[in-house]
Image 1 (cartoon, helix red, strand yellow):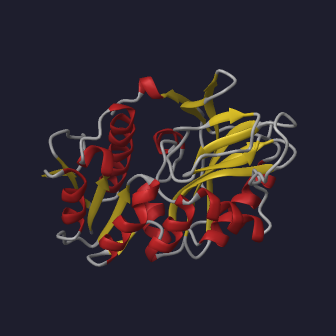
Image 2: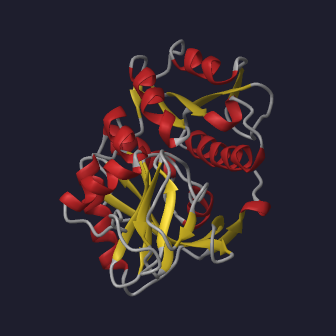
Length: 302
């Protein structure tokens, strides 16, 4: 099969850690699809990865959209900022089979307010949206309603959030993520410990330990399974949790995440094979995980 891998940060020369993470994710996926015998192409204005065939691209964000709407491939996978992913996948689906979540699932997952409410309705534990309350009675997390990772997140004694942001009740616990593949069935991959740096007021994601072994894995996977079903996620996805009294969902990524760099090194199966089976075939009941790897943002390479 001919597979299009469209990674936004590389294709639009976004720069900074976004492009560094994007390059690492693109490289891991391109290698895996090639190992499975598929032809891989990807757009780039210059940077290359050690697998796949580069297609020159210019024009930034609009050029990226035009590229998605002009390509012929059997199937494609987009990695893009959460608030752009629904539009990107809508364009992709007009040209080829989409190996990721559909536009509707991407849209609600990107909206932290609507996503939290949908999960609450489905009985999934979440960090609850804060209502009006006295300042100083408890702590709150203020974060952009639309945004990626830990960008723009801060802790406050007030639940008041400016336009475009939301406030959730601060919950103590361990920062984890659950990586999985979803199709006709749900396939757990790994639970990962997020390396979070905090000065007591802000959070910064700095890498992951893959996998993180915990006796509470059953609780986490049940919450992830129910969240995936409630949102209609497909293909590879990741959900961020704070593990305290309950495994509470704090963010949903309806796309590949940086954890795939670790997963590709500790999982016996090929990521590409699982992603394709989620779309076209039957997923296995489990995967084989061997060893453990820890990576930090500053160490990412291909």
